[in-house]
Image (tube, helix red, strand yellow):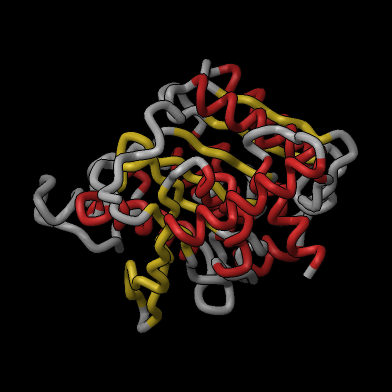
Length: 321
């Protein structure tokens, strides 16, 4: 219980710095009480049904919203083969502290469907947010995608993928053509304001064989004859181009699960096309599990990046309370 309380304390302070221990405890208690009293949780909303499987998401947002609110869409990690949305709820506290709305998404894992199912679901979750923006006061001009590991990959590809890639084709929507009151058409572009990537995969093909082969990637692609083609289709590096959203990545340079060199090459490619980006390197950092001090620095960098790109301005939104 003591360890859990310490984790809450660190998370609650990530966006405000690291003061003395007495103040830290007071600020943590204040944050916990604020979230408990001022936020509401709407769990397990079905955002799509595919092959008799219900894909669900949770919404956590300030009570009584009366204006559109900056909205974070989070995808959990687990190598596309494991993990749950519930397992990462605590990591969302820094955004709740900022007054944001949070949409926490589950998607089909490899034991339910192989690639590109997880990407299709993740894109459909973004489309669901657009479609239901008015009901839940999501600000579609200030949507940020995020996630760790495989979730970081999904956050990147969701934010970078053009509708022309065809991975939105199975989402609910008006397929007759043109946007309407029920939401965007499946050929409409859906923009996100920024992507916050935590040690996510950027080149899936690199993980299928050779020195950087990873069993989780092999399991996600399975024995499909066209697995290299699908791997390319779901890799963020495929979609590096001018005009994509601002991207910030946090990655340890000793990560044994997702090669740091892959993230370096990705950001070099972003630099070549003039995309807005930042790579936050954690010296000696492995696959997550960063220290408290490292997390304070990581979130300070994220806050600065989102402020620089005018995404943190004008919060929290107005409420009826």
